[in-house]
Image 1 (tube, rainbow, N blue to C red):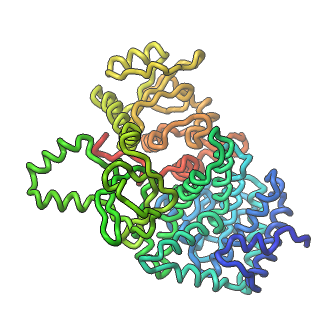
Image 2: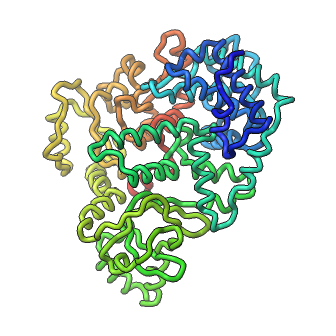
Image 3: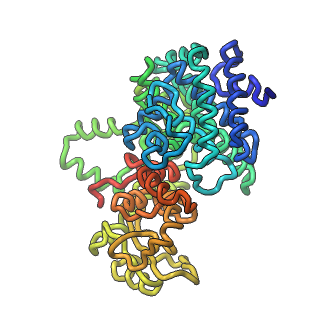
Length: 540
């Protein structure tokens, strides 16, 4: 057997440096997996052999995780079960939709064991995440079935004799549990985000953004690059359930001693803070994005409602307590005077906030307008205002289908919405424009999609054309509906034709399985999550 994967490539997925006999075993297993994938011609699906190698390494990492009881994959499948009703999308209940000679003997899913469904999913996920794939990949095709079968048979044969990775299990069980170990936690988080088998594609995303920075007019800047890296590490969402790595680690830690500490986390991405005071150990910051719209008015109202003492306590409670040792601030006088603001990222760990990433100190007066503009965006002020125009006119929860631009302009004028002066519309378009909105997205206008929306109020719906185009709304491919609106369309049953399969041979079965997994697919492609991204009910 020709060796294509080497020990250093396996070690790159682990939080320690020196390989032992266990690592040598899994390196050899990775090669066997690669050759099984190659025998099924699945490696040929990838244009870059490195992507095929990464898949083999990932499957070996999955096997190691299940055997060693590190519970990374088990956490993922448990979360899938909680959200969508099945441990693994598409494949756990595949036989209910499509039965063939390769899946007829598949055993029922066992979350504590290896499963062929898991391997199918990993094959699909990695192929979908390949750098050259620009569209949604169907998840039922013969090469995946055969590849997964060959790999599963290999792993099943090895299951009883394969070694556990005690070093990896001990590493996760000995995660930093002291409240002052944030830097150690950050190191673990960076390993999990960029190197763990579960997140093997994240490094590509970081490299892509850094290359984009290098090509930008300002060129490569180390401070900006560091901020990008920190933002990726701390706050980047995954296609897998749109959780950040910090959120995944919090869930995984439920199986390990660090659970309580690692779940008490929060993150504030790059934003402006005003320093209100300091003591020996902490700086006390005020989030300028959370400031009242009219501080004087708010203060007056508060004074009328509360005593001075209670007001001071309330103001004290709203301050963010940041450990001085996590910053590089020597002299804080310019911040305390209000001359400068802090622009940085903050992460809460162990009950305190830590500054992480780059820290900038622009003057407040020179950046006041920008801070206010960013605050208004953060608070969705304009979008809520615009949406309320729809709501006040009886269209708050409705999709409005309009024939042409002229009629659309009249409609918007009638509800009191003023189009931006620089807006332009397509010169050529098919009849059927959709106007819709939500508190967090404001008023949205969509061209070329009306034929996909199955609504009794939509005269432009065309089931035959929808069967070809509708899934693009789920995948976001050329049809950028906001995630919240996609969820609304799914909830209202307006996307019954959404089908990732366009081949006539599996169209009918493909439609059934696509529809059964449609929310997962929307979450996956749009990297959205209903618990975070939907407008609060009271704003509708």
